[in-house]
Image (cartoon, rainbow, N blue to C red; front, top):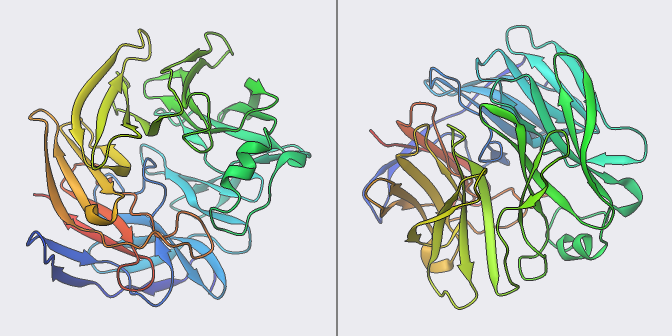
Length: 371
C-alpha cells in the first residue's frame, strides 16, 4: 500500500469492568497501532480526525483516521519514518514529522512534503522535535554520531547511552526562513525532550536524559539565543522527576515528582519558568506520562505500577483524582521502547481522550468520551 491509499478500522465498544465507563477500541489487535507522543498535537481542531501510526508490510507509516467511521488515509510511505514523532500545526494545515535525519512538513490537503531541516553529517537527531505554538519554529536535539549507543528497540541501551556521556546540542530551526542555529551544547551529557514555551518561542525547556537515580538534574531552561541557562529544579539521586510538559498558556510547566520512599504515590507540580517558583499541587498515583487539557482544568495520567493499571482523570481546580478506565498495558516493546505506553492525550476541546495499550495482545488505540 502506498501514500494516499485508504484503509478501514473496525471500532469496538465495551464497558470498562472497573469503572463502568464506555471505551472504544479504534484499531484491531492484528498489528501494531499507536498514536504519537503524548504532548504532540494529534487530533484535528474539529475533533474528527486522529493522526496515528500503523505497521503494515513490515514498515510503520503515518495515517489520518476518521473518528466517525474508522476510515484512514495513508500519509507516508517508504523507509525511515519515525512513528512517534509527528505533530499537526495549530491550524491543521501541515503535519511536521521526521524521516531518517530530516524534519519534514506535509501539506495535509495535497500530501506534498517539503524539507524543513536536515541534520549535518556526523550528527544524529533525536526525532523528538518541539514545535512552537505559532508553527514558525521548532527545536530538536542532535547527538554526535560517534557517541550513539545503537539499540535493539528495547530499554537495554538506556543506561549505557547515559553512561557514554554523549556530545549533544539543541538546534533551533526557523521554519519560514529555513535557517538554524545552535542554542546550547554539552560535550558529555545526554540531552532530550526539547519543548518551546507556548506564546514565547524564545524559551526552551529540555532535560538531562538518563536513569533518574543517576542524572544530575532533569529539568533545564535556556533562552533561544543561548543565554540564561538554568537548572529549573535541583534533585538528589533519591528523587525521580518526569514527564515534563508546558501548560497550553505557557504560564508554567508541569512535572511529577517522586522520592524513593514513596510507595504508591508521587506529587504533581508546576513551575514558573521566570521565577522558578515551584507549586506542589497535589499527590497522585504514579504516572508514566500525564498531560493537561487546553485550559488546565483536567489532567490525564497513565498509572505505572501493576496495581495502578488505570488511566486517571484529575479535576485540577478541586485537586481530585479518579480512575477513568483500566489501560491494562504490559509496557512491552514491539520494536520501539514506547510501543505499548498508554501516552494519554486529550482532544482539542477536551471532550474525549485517547490512549494506547496492548491489553488485547498487541498495541491498539482506545478512546474514552469525557462529556
